[in-house]
Amino acid sequence: MSRRLPPMNALRAFEAVGRRLSFTLAAKELHVTHGAVSRQVRLLEDWLGQPLFERGNRRIALTESGAAYLAEIGAAFDRVAAATARQFERDAGRLLQVNAVATFTLRWLIPRLSSFQLAHPGIEVRLTTSNAPLQDLREPYDVAIRGGPDRIPGHVAEAFLSEARIPVCSPKLLEQRPLSHPGDLARHTLLHAATLPDVWPQWLVAARVPDLKPAGSITLEHFYLTLQAALDGVGVAMGPTALIADDVSAGRLAMPFAAPTLPARSYFAYVPERCVDEPAVRAFCRWLRRIART
Image (cartoon, rainbow, N blue to C red):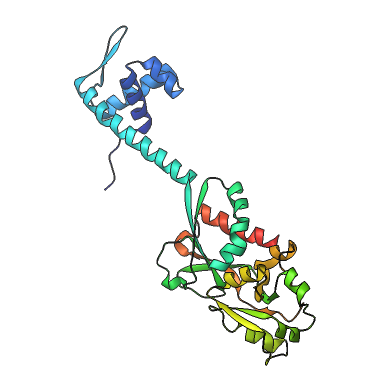
């Protein structure tokens, strides 16, 4: 059912006059003329079919019905003002929930996240990590970052960062035991990730040393742990090129071989369809695309 409401401007004028008991002060508050306020109040009285004020020569007073009406209208305006303030606060402090795989988060996203915060100070990012498929993810998210391309029902996917894998180690380790040929890995410890057990065997096949026996092998639970171990000189890891680029540029990691590289899944931003038009989501996805190109 449609609501039967009086003219909104007339309500605003009545509420201001009733609260201040002055047409002049109400006019100043509303930034209109005394005559405009008077006409709006008359319009409301005509619409209601009853007087709301008793008008004297120098003062006005609310009628009994006018006082009762003001109490209701004033409370309603207060609720509208409070709801509007909350809406502004919600927009100003928009919470953006991002879920990303752990290695990507540690090695790429977190080192760059400050630039997003500087560009969008009103958006609070809540970042969680998980390697679980999105279908199995229980915590809520506005943007999820996973490998792809995958078709996930109810989501829009967009690639923003390509990836490949290649052996990496610390420069100090490389000085101690140079790697001129893939066969030289026989003098090194290979660092394996339990989550990606086939990466080293695949690379050794591509490098034409499928039967290579390394000096040692260490298996760590997560991919990012193998990278940390490589940084600490423990052994040689298979590094994702996009995620090690900063360490290579800074001289913390070295890539002893230019080839072969193993193709890997690109990084995609997966956005639930209900969130596609959210301003904070769109801003974050634009930032991902831009920062990935730099």
